[in-house]
Image (cartoon, rainbow, N blue to C red; front, top):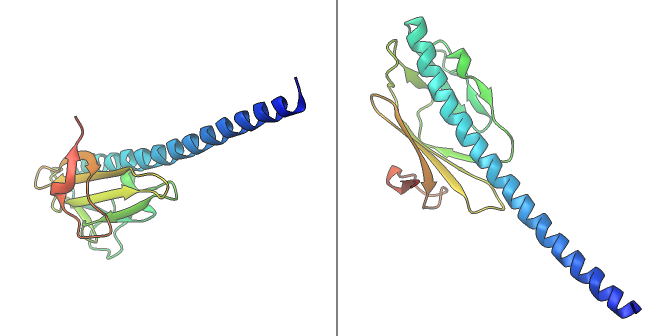
Amino acid sequence: MTLAEQLVVVSLLSGLGCLGLVSAQEQRQRQRVEAVASELLAGIQLARVEAERNQGACGISLDSGGWQAPSDGSLPACSSALKSFEGGVTLAHSFPGTLRFSANGLVIDGGLVVLSQAGTGLRRCLVMALPLGVVRLGRYDADPAGTLSATQCQAER
């Protein structure tokens, strides 16, 4: 092989390698968004179970770092649901300061959460409806920086 042919082969292999790195990075970002969506759902379910098991109301608060104890001290924390999320995922939500669960596991508050991450177009959403706390996961079809709307959370088929 001549030097020119070797340079062409190296250039082609380098280009393919770069494409693979970009694709792998986007896949990792998508997986982070999916992981945080699963953690959000698990936190809600754990809080509901804890309220029922203890036969007492409890609450959790959502911030960019994950599920936290209620900051206002109005309710005891649903301690089994407290969890920090993996960094880098942007979170927008319409939940109140404290998401409350009654002693029989009903949800007193509801709302919408939208998750996204730079570098990927994936936007996951979680809608929690009152009073049973029915949760729907889906894809969000609007800009999460605008006004959040549960109608933009499309269930996956």
